Length: 205
Length: 205
Image 1 (spheres, chains in turn red, brown):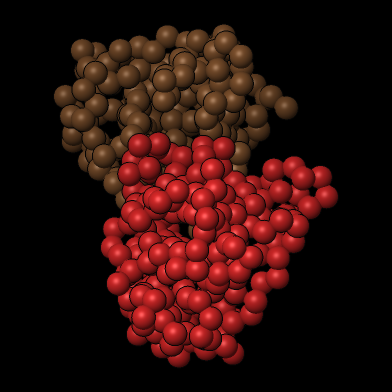
Image 2 (cartoon, one colour):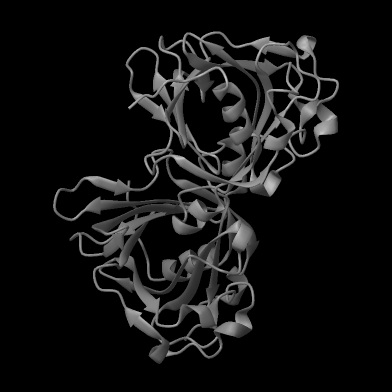
């Protein structure tokens, strides 16, 4: 069931995403198959453009929170009657490590610091009043080389005001075979702290 | 290639196993698909019988080392030209939490404290001078109920003097379908501390 996604949903989704997310409960309930992970998402203090909302994302093992294994810049836009989260990589990610919990570190982040990742935009729809669902755009173009194998990324995620789940998998570009990911299922996060009040339709141009 | 396993190998295997094992390197190399796990194995200060070697095992997420999600008592015996690791459960495991790192806690552990797990003995062979390999005995009798599904346990493990790897999986008792486990592969541990010098053919009756 897809309900109409509206331009204002860009801000609602950004508010729900902005926070410090943890899957601690999931790890405790399923030993030893889920690492304890933290996802920190924060709006940029100096947005790179006037369009939509700009978010910094960092994902880390809880035991080395200050050395995330994944970072990204996401630009949330309303386009084609959906939300499109355009994905950028950071050229020097280390400089911004910890920025989701210390927003001051994100101040110098500008257009020079990032590169757009073609084929890796995520398409998101509001599916009911409580939920957004999304995934990587079609086309199998979001490529990741993992342990020497070229894979294309598949993401299925779901966001509510207090939870966030994500199933990330990599498939062989040639054979479509599942190469990496979890058969134990999606990572299930709950929001431990919210940074949503830093985002409003009024404050974001 | 299976080389002859000798009665003395019971003590060699026990010495190699006795220690504090961590898969930290694996977790760091494969985010986010491996939790950081610690396996502590220690010989009992008061062996439950004169036969072979008795080991206490506890397995925990590193972030809650003092609340292991799995404990076991293993009795290593030489039988049928192999090493058999007979598996016991602890009736009140909590009493012995932390015993692998504080051996004093294991002092009161006696025959009253444990129950034998039928069908869960592990058969181990020396495969070369540097390696033991083992797994659960045939018969699909080592049953584990996980999230409401009855599964039988499959373990494939390999032990050297400094490393220990284990691939634990559960299969549906009726359909043989893989129900739980990691497609990312075996947990790979390295020994961070050895307790092997507490075991010798001389000191163990």
